[in-house]
Image (tube, rainbow, N blue to C red):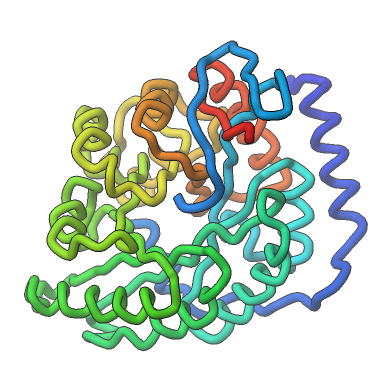
Length: 337
């Protein structure tokens, strides 16, 4: 049975949703189902880790530490809401922002509506990043989709997450490096950072795999993400400390999700189901991973992978409550100044 604080929080959230959209019309869902489905197979302000159980001192005097900011991705049922409804839900639950799909006209229009919410609201609600899947069998060596997304992100402070899938194995490393370099060059001119997003069953399944290309290109606007889900799906959970140690100077994003202790490899659906859950579900102990974040020097907000989850009015409440508890346990805080 849920606790009374949980029920109170949920009722408050539902009340916010009942107010309805305030300023923009509902945007059609993205037609790029294939790109979003590919998710299956630090930016930001000055944040810093703290010490669990402590009361910190800022320039304004003693204050209680705040849990590190958490943001979901723009699916998991959020895609079924208008942008206004989605933002009101997330803001009502104290999520710090969102990461949004950016391939195709419908996705770019929806991204633009999210960006309108974040303009002038730094520290309140941010579009942390836009993400773009690239399948070589569909898009070849063209970076046009990435450049269209970069145009929308210019001047917003949001990053562009990129990941690549080559099922046919026909793209050479040199061709891939050239494509990434061209995307990065365009992004640099627009003052947008590019994040190489590791993804199971893609060209770079883990952060350690992605690190080689990031090191080769070696530019301060090009980094990588550490995603717990894809590390576990790639059976690299026992190497997480090494991952943070080797890549900590290149980490631009960190993403977390609930998971089971054991990876279920019986099917793709089972693999997903055992590594993508709300944070209050699953037997996997998230605290060691969060301690690695706190000690790594990564100062940005943390992403929550919610792919294929449903009923966001429910799982987002449970997730943020558990996240706040875990942050206070391990000392993963926002910066206080």
